[in-house]
Amino acid sequence: MPFPDLAELASEAFCYVTTTGRVTGRPHTIEIWFLVHDGGVWVLNGAGGRSDTVRNLRARADAQLRIGTVATAATGRVVDGLDPDAPVRAAMAAKYRTDGDDLVSWSRTALPVVFTVAPDS
View 1 (spheres, rainbow, N blue to C red):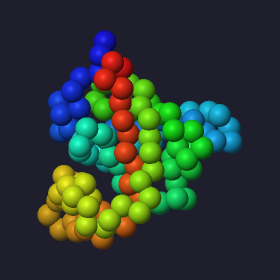
View 2 (cartoon, rainbow, N blue to C red; view 1 turned 135 degrees about the vertical axis):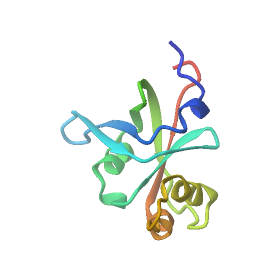
View 3 (spheres, rainbow, N blue to C red; view 1 turned 120 degrees about the horizontal axis):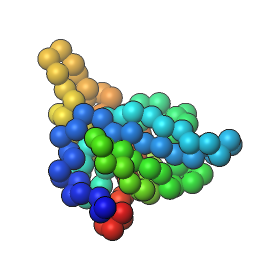
């Protein structure tokens, strides 16, 4: 079954990212906030380069994404040096902001990763 249009999944609260452990070779899955933006699935990793997910993706870019009940293969790319004022950062903060939360600092400093999904996945 083809992966649905990403816009159809954008309202989900979380996505699940599975990478391959760079040392163990075993699957490593995290639940993380996400944003559909410019044709990709973006996540902001607050642990930055220390994150196992980020280190795994730097070693091997292939990953699995699950959003809602839909899963697909994807390719992840760590976006080093993304401007703190980049629109994707502000959009991520806006998606998850609640009363009393100020996600601006987090969104400006967290390490972005973008996943691309093949259209025929």
